[in-house]
Picture 1 (cartoon, rainbow, N blue to C red):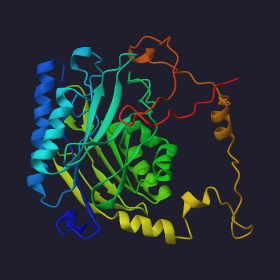
Picture 2 (tube, rainbow, N blue to C red):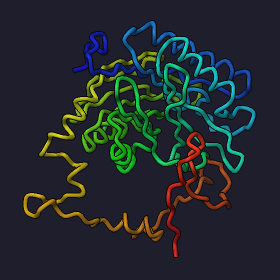
Picture 3 (spheres, rainbow, N blue to C red):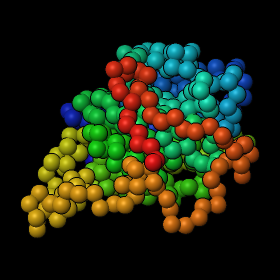
Picture 4 (cartoon, rainbow, N blue to C red):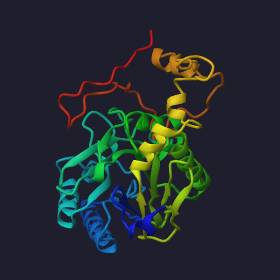
Length: 347
């Protein structure tokens, strides 16, 4: 059920809107300011469009476009005017919002970051994209893990960005940390259409979670993003699916309470539990080991594929091969008491 796209909101429902925003061209500070205002105007459209809407989601690259420009003059910061404008828009329209920024990084390349802001203007979730779309994207690899926040109406929400969603481990980590709704924002173009759809559905079913997914839309004169917002229920079925129409807002009521019910009550295909309790019919509690070689090797810093990979830097896309080494996870900037995630080094 979708509550007719959220028109009929239930007591336990969360109504979400996915904005298939027109792909912009942003090359100057003036264009950045204009696009910031456009996004804020679309927050207002979302509120007028659906009085019951709890959370409006903008795609990756909605502020900066697809140029991959790392010009410091158009990079953002958490205390900059763009984020301040997004906060004010959420306050003015009494709605939660999910936004994309390319964030200045004094220690290296910019981060591709996402924010969830509540209806009081507070940042509830701040995430740096863990898996930039190599070799095309120049962004610094994220180092804050996969955060989860309390969302509207008692929900638990995570945000992953674009290429992140191609890794089953990303959605699983979000679910393992309690996310009932996994948002995936993207700037994908048409060649990824099939992969986009099947991974959105698989991420939902494999983790008994709702996924809410949206791309940029339309052409900037060079690239064509595909739009195609889609909500997937925890059984993998598509609840609502958008088209390629620019600036359309796809709406749906999602039910975190039913996610919780399924996670507790399902026996067949309760895979989040069964991953670590293999064969519990045969042995008490199931096998609670880690039989996956790649997990052990990643933790030990010895991950190595049994084949050769030809493309291992961004030179094929015009970026110089990097010389810096990844420094590893750090404490969350908005949560000063949080420790850095442990990082095991190769021997």
